[in-house]
Amino acid sequence: MSYLTESLKIEILMMIGYGDRARTQCEVVRLFRETHPDLPPLNQGTISKIEAQYREMGHVRKVPSKSQAVVDDDTKLNLLLALEENPITPARQLARDTAPLVQMIEDLGDKKN
Image (cartoon, rainbow, N blue to C red; front, side, top):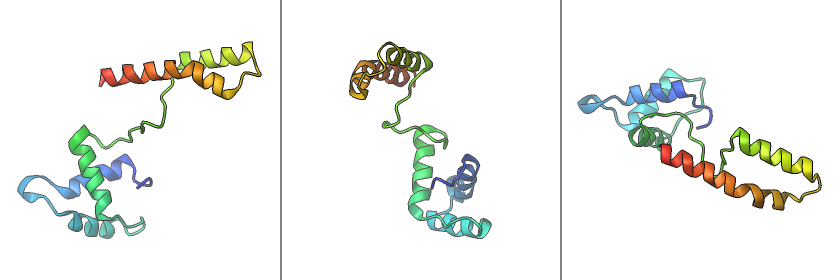
């Protein structure tokens, strides 16, 4: 599914349709194959995930997973300053020192949404 751009996902949503004119996921898979024979074929699960994301979030943009920590420039700067002060600081020590900052940033991001 990584090859699907945002515009392709929107096209899939348009293929699904709305209301009494909605197509089944199997029909969308077939229609997508006919429309884009050069792309790898989709499966029903991919269509389901795209549709579920749209219904839940209202968009189909790529959403960073929880494992991808979002770090702002201030945190990066603090990390670089800590390395400059003591270049032999172990990575675990740096992670321990900056983890509360990363968690605080993630919490602020969750509150905004």
